[in-house]
Image 1: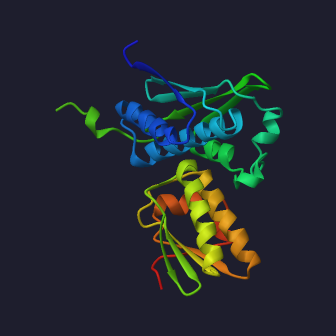
Image 2: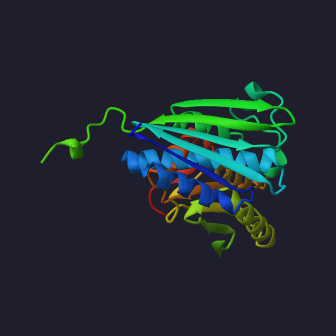
Length: 151
Length: 103
């Protein structure tokens, strides 16, 4: 289809790669003509998911994190996958302020932020096998593009 | 970490992007400075900050808890609209004042 585009990004689970991951996704989504606000929303959500994979999924070990991005018309689909330890109770993990690592000063707001900034959030996890965070965001909701007018 | 100490008040000039990666560094350095200079007040300066995620919120909450136990206070200055939204969403504005201009 003409209006779909895809990319896949695999990188080491180092905290220094968090900035790289969110900037790359932000660059990929520019073809959808997002507002600054929408780019910031996606960057925050990516940062949360990648941080989770590094701290909780791999617990500091350096392994692969995979981000799959797809744009379809005006919608951005994101999948952030790790093969780490997985989440025992996904429902509890998604509660605001829930954290398994309070000693690391985790605020427990990660999933809440992802939920707030994206349109849809789904977490697929199997304990001991890994976690995939799937997110969706419609870009340009309720906004008319002046650039689509013919000259 | 860029910071300034005036008597028992510490001003932390937060970086351009406050994520898990540099939150760790700020936590370590801030704790060292707080202990060494008997800090009671912390001002988080968001002037340069364009990005903040839950790790950034974590580091602010951590400092708040510490300073609170010592009987002090924390506040934020120069937060842009985006930062104010994040701070409000996380509920941190209930424990910390955001000032428009530094007094």
